[in-house]
Image 1 (cartoon, rainbow, N blue to C red):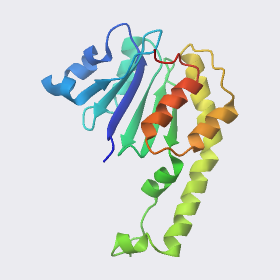
Image 2 (image 1 turned 180 degrees about the vertical axis):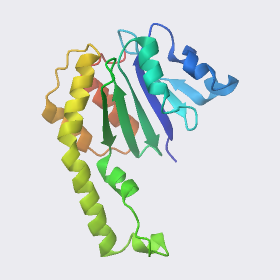
Image 3 (image 1 turned 90 degrees about the horizontal axis):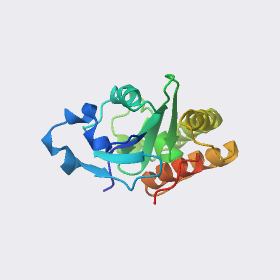
Image 4 (image 1 turned 90 degrees about the vertical axis):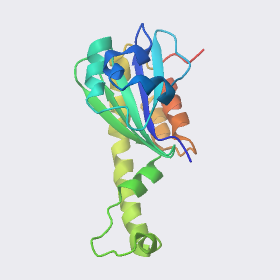
Length: 192
């Protein structure tokens, strides 16, 4: 079983675990959080178990740090929705592991009694193919949003949009590795 929770990426002079917005998560936070190796310039990634992070924390974190930040909502290490926000309030989102995201987002018909049987049908395969194509069509705009966000964060993005698109279309066993690779490609300094 993989990791389910949130990967929070932000710049701060102090450890992200000390952020006031996380202080309300309770005394057991340190047991349910893992700090990744920091990146130069104060960039940090905090891995939080399911149930700690709230959607309204991202704007509060950006306001507190005065820097762009992003969070990846990870499900079983197989799929993640990354949401970035800059200091001007511009937001972007992108799915990681598109095949898994498509399977997660497929809406089952109301007349289906047994989902386990429906996922083996040609009808399911067609719905899945269409959903995957929808997500794939969004990749260029998602990649552009990620590059704009990285520039707003103050990093000199050396990546070409085509490379970011390639990463957004990639499939990895552990989506956490894709998240880390995305940050690297966007030009954030690599962890020491």
